[in-house]
Length: 306
Image 1 (cartoon, rainbow, N blue to C red):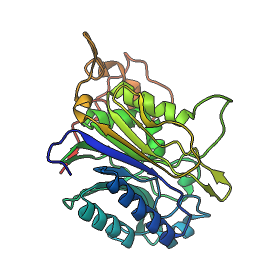
Image 2: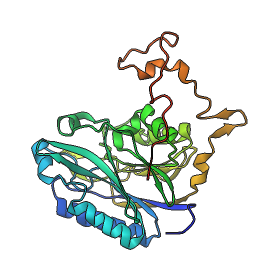
Image 3: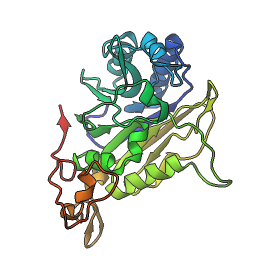
């Protein structure tokens, strides 16, 4: 890994995990890490639930393949991160207790740092299987820059992405599994459009790594994408039902410039005193003059994990 914190060569390794086939998933994830390192990538993102596959029948099946933070899969990722001098980000089914599992992701730094994130916003039947996380997305200070973590549906909650941006993330890495729910003819996947919008409104790079393949009646978008701080695609950003290794070089310093015109700054232009309804648990917005938000979601401190 180069001594300078900038630029950074990143990769998204889109592969096809198999549900409940941990050996297969270890093999293809380890091969993907090697392929990224062979392409001189300094960071590689793997899909959501890379270790386990996604479409579980029930919580009991998920428990049968769940691993702890120091299980065989993650230890293998760490060994390769250290040997190949590459940062690894990937998703796994985390064992919490004999009755609980989490949809989790890790960032593994070659220096030995491991940062853990548990998906806070569960999609559809995930709510029947996983225990949601209750911590904000971590912002990890690596030798290459400040990297945030979240998982799939988290990206569709603008408050959550803004939280990572306000915490100082220059690059947001998101393992995802985007089910192909169909779209109008000629349209790009909406998931990709939302990633581009999230990057643009926060002036932050986003690398989202999807999967492909057919699993228990579910097909996937195969929409891995890397977008710049203006929201424009650098790699991917289309539906591809095959393995792909996206590679691009980014200058993380660009994400520290939040000015979009001579007079507009994407964060300083915020007016939290008007956004009281964002802190309400009700689906009805509070009248902007009736409540003033004083929660950390509206003006959070940096979440910098060393």
